[in-house]
Length: 133
Length: 224
Image (cartoon, rainbow over all chains, first blue to last red; front, side, top):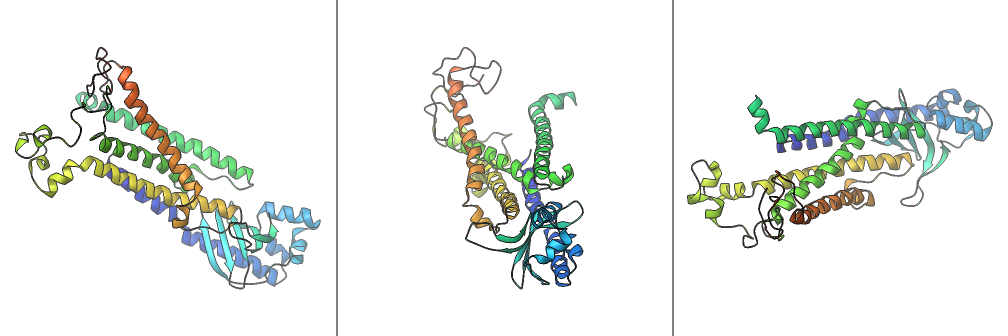
């Protein structure tokens, strides 16, 4: 493979690594805002629709009640705007301006929240989350 | 056409092997990623999506950078370093950049010598070092691309574990980056070193990478 072709491949790799992440970050942020808006209006069903299947299932198992009831009993931010959004391949982070953060995974048709109401702990340690899948 | 194929068979065969191996790597890597996806309860991704991901890119580029480093170092160091008995080495009294006459440059260039071998100044200097310069540039470029794709894959893993992401500069100091880099470097250096030594004592009839079968072990810088 000639040097020009290899150099082009390297440039393409760099481009692809960051390609499309802006739009995908906006989509992830929209899911997080929809989730917290649903909590703010007391709509448990709409809130649960933003969760990953694994997270919703784990919540129901822990609380021993349907997701739409259990989600409203948790201490999660009600409403809010995403101030920090980040996408890395199939994972995303949404930090709320009002405090707290959510982690999202890419689902079959859109982003889904895998952890919510998260706060940082020590450096190089995972966030502590009110809701976790 | 037949003549073209025969006279270029080495590069053609290796290009085909490269494309076949790259395709195989894509298929195997795609299968592995989807196993992980299913294990984490996440949806599988398509092959098309995988081959433009940082996962695949990082896997490809960490190998490319080490190959080009191997060639750049081999080409450069064999100017001065010698290995008695090896066809990979110059003869023992030939260490160094050699004379203009030996290198057929300037007034010693032949009629059909490359154009920049006949001139003086910066053009000749560039051409005299063009092999190392190009190999070295590709090495640095692919190592940089490895780091860019690597930090994305690394950060994806961190987000998956509900941790903060890191910047590129921080990533360059991580075990992940240096593990991927050095695991490739060690194998490249071992391969070159092995070749230098094994070719002293072993032979492959007909290959220019080997000494002639009947050449003594002490014969240095001869080809089969």
